[in-house]
Length: 281
Ligand SMILES: [Zn+2]
Image (cartoon, rainbow, N blue to C red; front, side):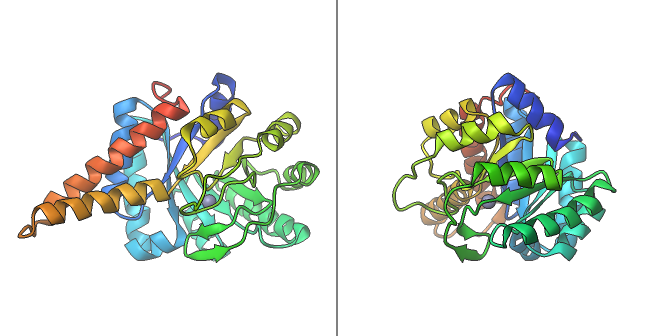
């Protein structure tokens, strides 16, 4: 069912949990995510990156996404994740996305503000909400690789939030996209300072592979949206690899597809329970 990003995140803030935000790259992953949310009666943020949308076919993604929102028994936020191309962000706004993220976090502060303002103006005029990033998380973002730009500066985040009027704000506090070589050290004090100064819901990117206790600590500090991409990709791939190894003569895509859906669902349920969003739909 349809909902609003800000509404769900503000509720999460009040009730001290986080809404899980999961990336999908194909129909099996989408189905696994929705099945997990319905099983746990959890609101969920269904995310697609630019390159994932291009892989699946942008028009197919618009159709799948719209149907997922309309037919699911739980609140679903359809979210355009890590938008670099403003024209594509605008197309997502025109095609029933609940919210869009602009990622101009590698740009200079003023340029990031200017681009975010442009997206906010376009999106808000169409009832679409906006997430932007201040400070740069880095790592393997979508198909790009970049070094993190250190941690978010609290005063800069405050200024950025005031100037842009975004609905959710992503900050850099020590996580990174993709697979970690060693567990990251999250900067809980920065999260606390940002949350104390800014009412806008705060988002944690690059949360795959981070110990669940650390994510729970981040939730205690006030994070309300936690992005998970890589962990679902890994479970999806493991399930396929295992099924094909166990069934060397197997060829029915529906059979190994089922295995992938189930694996994604189980991993998503694990995160939902850890984030405390179960029963919050
Ligand atoms: Zn991200």
